[in-house]
Image (tube, rainbow, N blue to C red; front, top):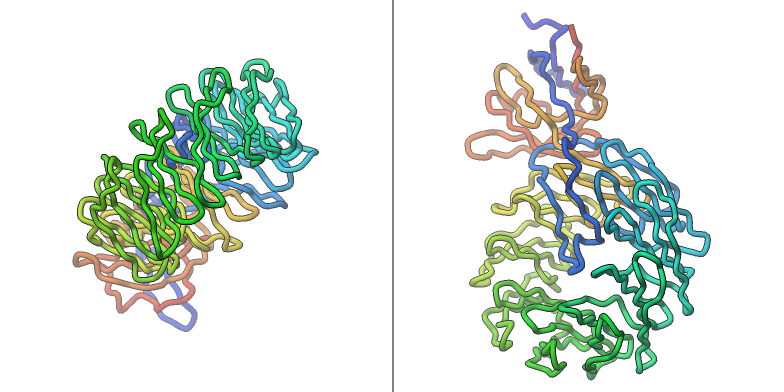
Length: 497
């Protein structure tokens, strides 16, 4: 006979369901043991390559904490030394302790929005709509200095060798001492267009202007080295690989430009639509397009290697891990494609996968739309999903096994479930839990869930379970699926000794 004081109960309205014995060892949400992993810049680094430190979350998950404010969050947070830095459209920058979600300090801007910050050597730098570049102590929020531009909004800079390079909305590119906040030089475009945030390679800044010009600027003096002018209305910030700059224009042409001289090496045109900003890996350039073709060409010569055509519209420029390209289409399909051959490896249509930035961490691919999906990068199988409160999402970061993501008004910290739970001597790895778990006495009370789809995986029956807005799959190897309640609400209740 099963003791009522030691039971995990599955019940559904109007249904008879089994009562299963369970030991005192129940799962708790994992927390980061080491917060040394850093994501100090928006999208990971100065190349905007979405680097994140991992490890990933490969099991059912729980929300560890939520941080909510009234206005919307503008962009993904950055994280340094266990502190998250996030901005709101109300003009406030928040410093939030990553383990607990507790606010440490805030920086209020009274002259408009604050741009996404960077943190270097314990100092946080952030531009603002009012033309002020702030330097504040990243631990305390104490202001070190401020720099005011002459011509409007100044955006968050890049920093190399103690010099900050920041562009203003009025068209200037400023070089500013990171120590003192003193201007070193400024560069103004000659085509009356605004200069955009540059990239820097080997002492040369490469910056585009609204006037469809790409400038090469000496980082020490601010003098122009050369310029390249596109024959369209605009040109986009390039990437630099092995002495070649790759930049696309608004007409859909992709240029390869010699970084030393500014001369064109080759270009790739499309008669069908626009080519997107590329990536270059192992001598091959990959670029998606708004007409559904993913191009693979020689980065040195522009010679086509292969092309892949999606079934459902425009296909984004991919990310690549271990010889596989991952990309999404406008139609909501997620593709895995061989980088060598262009052959499809798998596709996922389990959700409306967002056409936009993807990240892969430790074999888990994260794709977001109104829902954040965790997809096995090898097979395309969904591992788990998370539904946001307001259906709007952005690219997450993953640091030390914790995933940080947000919708318009809430920043979430999501973690793995630690340990396992035994039901009739069957291990349910990553069995669902919630933040209601009390460490030490393993008590769970009144956790409302949903049972969804079921499927067979390698001889095991897996059931989709949702708890606290988090959906995951758990194996039910030794339990007769016929005894489980159908899709609908169930309740897990643990009554301790």
